[in-house]
Length: 103
Image 1 (tube, rainbow, N blue to C red):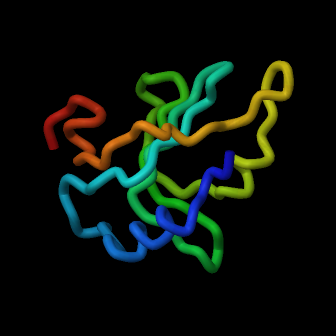
Image 2 (image 1 turned 135 degrees about the horizontal axis):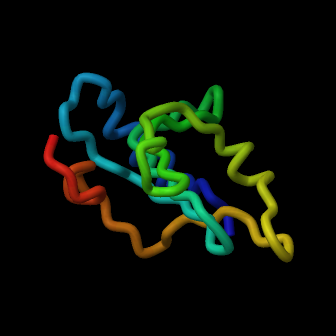
Image 3 (image 1 turned 90 degrees about the vertical axis):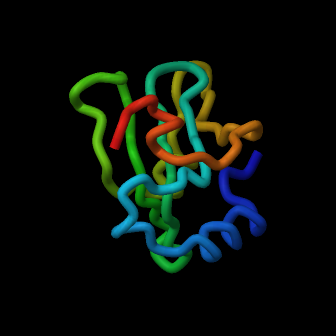
């Protein structure tokens, strides 16, 4: 399965920058099916192949906003060679709803 599709890339382009949005829309969710880690993507730059979003590795105080690369997600192989996956059933939603916090 490809982590990025043309339709998804188009949707990121439609939404554009959300840097001044208090409660941004999470467009895509990526996760490690064999371990810890969820990446919530709010923006994507096709030139650098880099996302901006919220990263939750252990669901604790270390969760943070930042940049992450699709190349890094695609190259990761965990136990038994299982890689990062995109949640195919993800529906776009605001950060506050997805994470369950008030912003």
